[in-house]
Length: 175
Image (cartoon, rainbow, N blue to C red):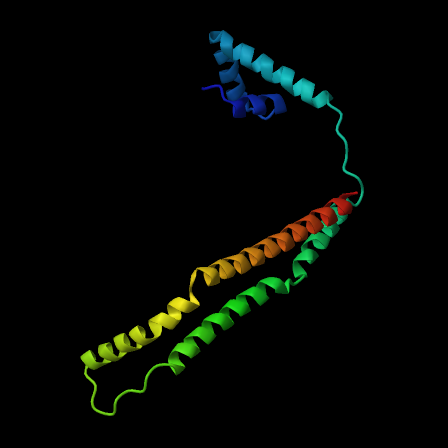
């Protein structure tokens, strides 16, 4: 028999059979460390049984469930700022694509080969690259970067305020 915590716990609870009890007594006689381990377990068991336990307050389960329900109801709030920003970018991208499609040159009526398509595309890019580079000059890029930074800061502010509000509601529900 090998001395394990399971066997020691069964011994302390009086759940060992007579054969297992004989084996344990034999082991204790042969191994002084086993006796020390058994005495330690007995001491811990007696000490733990003397500890006074407290019962949970009446209705604690319902109070905790109410707090969880109140905290999860905050999730139901809808913040439309993020949707607005995503919609704005979608409109911007859609408008850019629409502009490019409307400004494509009309194809020549004669049959087009793949070379003519590439020639038409390169001609379109050469003619409109100047206006595109004027549109995306240094000042415009700085303005776009500034606007995106402001949008990022504002959205960060709303996320932080939402977090603070949620945390405060959670703390108030515990008090």
